[in-house]
Length: 207
View 1 (cartoon, rainbow, N blue to C red):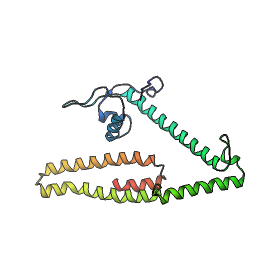
View 2: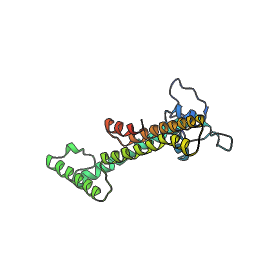
View 3: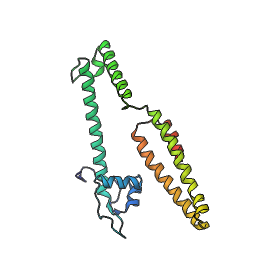
View 4: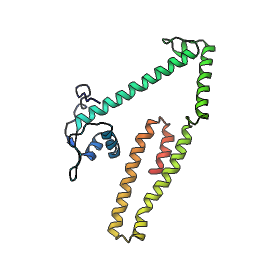
């Protein structure tokens, strides 16, 4: 993706600079895992990481890339919605310039019935899963992961004979891992468009 910094300049008052992965994650209010994923997706890198050298990123380049990516996602979502809307209208005899409310009550009922039939077909084929079922499964998995991670330092202390200091370091590493996972999940859950209370319940498993 081409970076257009003139179209997506840094916010007013922000200062450009070269940052490492952790610094860029803080600047963009995201996680290091997300930074790594974005880098693999083509986010500009000022200097490649090598043995003994960390990755470095120009903040303005990464900000412009992030903004352009988000705009492309919005454009794609709008395009998909337009395709779906036109298809739904075509099923009931509407024209591409019509909105649903321009249809007669009978045509709207047929439109909604066709949509429900399509969704039911997707559900039967396993292509559509109720959102609550997904979050219930995530809640179960994340609770298990949290128990395993929080219990790891004690297990290492018992089975590997860690010293008190080493156990403290293991606890700190486990806490960092849980925070990182929580932040990454918070970002991804938001993409699902879940109700805030549903998302909050799921993320509580990592709180």
